[in-house]
Length: 120
Image 1: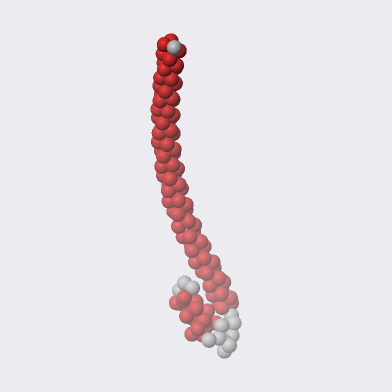
Image 2: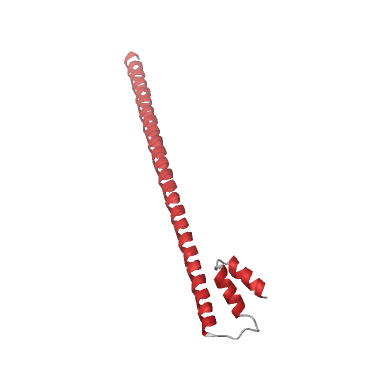
């Protein structure tokens, strides 16, 4: 039991000295003292500190991912805006070309009707 507890405490990040003292104080043959209570409190505080460090590390990693994601979104939005501008320009050019061609055809039709009317 003591070895398993010792190994579990080491695995969660508790120092070897503290883990050994806690494992020894929790054995059934040991009589509890004030030092044992202090060791357990130290163990709890160490585990809380370790958890807080892990949370801070995860928050920092999350912030990095968030910054990278925002940069990617801005780049994608810039590309999308650029593509939209190109499409709008092409659409405007094709509209101008259509209007010029249509007006040319109408002028040709008007000239043909006027010539036909004049010579008949």
